[in-house]
Image (cartoon, rainbow, N blue to C red; front, side, top):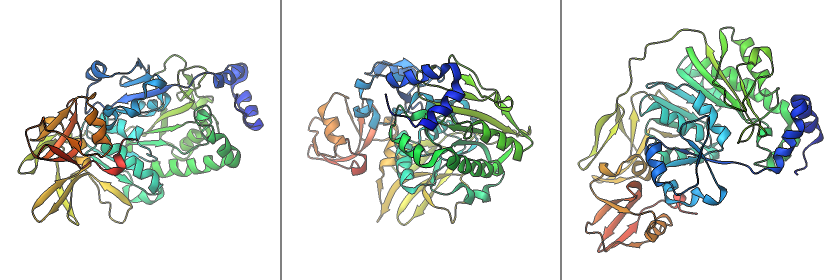
Length: 440
């Protein structure tokens, strides 16, 4: 078994009491692997018909599944088509619990690498708007790539300290805070976190979490909801943070959350509606989840941002929420009308990056290809997932397509789901798949 810090073991024994030995035994058990179906691209029912993996449902979400380690879904073309997101099963709970409605304006405050943001996007059904933020620019690069692969069209990716978002006071309907934490619940999965725990401990993160929660409460509308989560067991980072939030916001309350087998309630009287996940009680790692509501005021949402047919060029149209095309340095972006004023903030991507327009010629982007459906584009090449040319394409290689009659810019698909673009001439496809997306 891993060598765990003595102070940590002492803390866990105090917390778990008679369950402490069972918790220690969980370190000798296998970890669990999960994927979540990206429902805007494919329904769960249709995915199960084509998935070549050994799947078992995750109980607390209707689109999540356990898979076996040797399935290696990150190596399958469907992963590159954005049909699913790889996510630890317990980490699926926060995005499931936060009740998103069509038309909601949502903030994911600590969003990287993007698993919970992608779930929010799915629940918005193309309406409303998601501000997906993380303070780390490098982590936001991964966040951006993941959201683009999922086909997000109504999101903004930003790298800012939440304190700098004070212009959005009382602006968001829902906020998700998957707070930076000591990571105690992930010790089995990521051993390096043990060293980090020894360096920083719980107090370092508790101070940071209080700052984030206090800032988020100012950004939340009356009647709005916050989902607070961590992947740690420390009451100092969990229940004590919720108690702090209740103390600084008197009209805040903790809402009850559906309990599943193995779930444990919060450990204090004020936090009994919170949820604790322990790896010796569920098939997943450690997590803490709390759903909070600020006040009781509820607003009737008049803007459901119904998807409309939108023409991008003479030959390309797709269904998008209400919005407009914005030109920036020969680059074209589609921004939903719900996007607020972001001037002066560190924005990596605002809306959907469509492509470049030079000398009257439109060159579509990789992010656009991932937002399209096969029927949206007039010239497509559909390859079977077992066709060796699919991997050649994903490795950015030139491929032979003499069996395909059309020429010119072509949307490459696997089993009907877009992967990216290529240009065909004389039976040879010149690859336009981005190097940073390349199959590894």
